[in-house]
Amino acid sequence: MKQFFDEKSLKAFEGLTTPFYFYDLEVLEETLNAIKKAAADHPFKIHYAIKANANSRVLEKIKEHGLGIDTVSGEEVSCALEHGFEPKQIAFAGVGKRDDEIELGIDAGIFTFNVESLEELKVIQEIAEKKGKMVDIALRFNPNVNAKTHEYITTGLEENKFGINFWELDELFELLPKLDRLNLLGLHFHIGSQIRDLSVYKNLCNRVNQFQEIFRQRGYDLDHVNVGGGLGVNYEDPDAGMIPDFEEFFSIFKEFVKLYPGQSLHFELGRAVIAQSAALITKVLYVKKGIKTNFAIVDAGMTELIRPALYQAYHKIENISKGKEVEVEAYDVVGPICESSDCFGKRIKLPKTERGDLLAIRTTGAYGEVMSSNYNLRQNAKTIYKDEIH
Image (tube, rainbow, N blue to C red; front, top):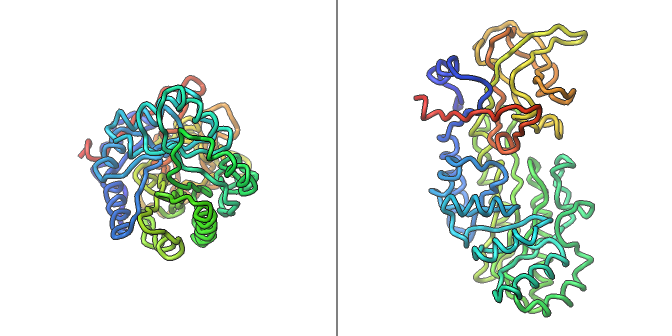
């Protein structure tokens, strides 16, 4: 079992200003190697979902391993280009693309716009006409597959805002021949995030095959299918589950998706790539007695990690100042922000915790730093890399 912290890192933490994000890029390296090994010998192409983490050193490492980029904003497209990713490695999804974002993608010559509505198709056609350019697209469909995850990160049900619905197909097929500036390359699906029950992907595969057959019957010979991402990670015991089981994940698609000659299968992995590579390090400011439990009040808050406040997400919390002391007490670990939701965990069992102790909030590589804010006019937390303090 790999241990995330070593004595040299813990010693270095004592002289650093908290809170800060601590990255071990060796974990990212091992994760990327595992992805490449599991996807080898199949027509699979991996796009990293940059929304999970746009840290420059993270992107450098991902580029070294040859992954493409999945974006959901013009700013993310620009970020990918600035970090040296080729335009034809960049897919652009997102339910609300602005005109200027569409123009940016067209001018850059990106791989595809993953189009999420019939009206968006018309807008891209109009902009492409003005520019006198052909534009490569994929169609994002809502497969109505339950991802069995939190309602805020479920994206593939009919009540969600994402994608074209099955019942719009007739109207879609009437529209497509009129869009002479759009080149349809593929189909795109995404059902949610932090998916731990991999059986739901079998349901997705069945829907993919159904949509593929419908388009083939209509005479469309597609280049690729994009099945999204959403693979979950082990928040409960990160040291025991540092690397997700990519072999099992990819095996489902190898077995159940029917690809036609020349087609490739694309994935958008974000959280599974980067989540375990970072922790949020914070200092205990006060220990305050409460009625049901004591409060460990720390200097990090929802401004550094919003996931627990936003959708009650669990992150393992460790007192890294106290080692393996036997005596434990229960604490509500809370931040300094003037919101009652600024809480990282309730009744967390920790070694007896005191002012000045350092706590590590684990598995914060995904949707930690990238979702941080300056609420309460707080400054951005710094980023520390393990290889820079060794």
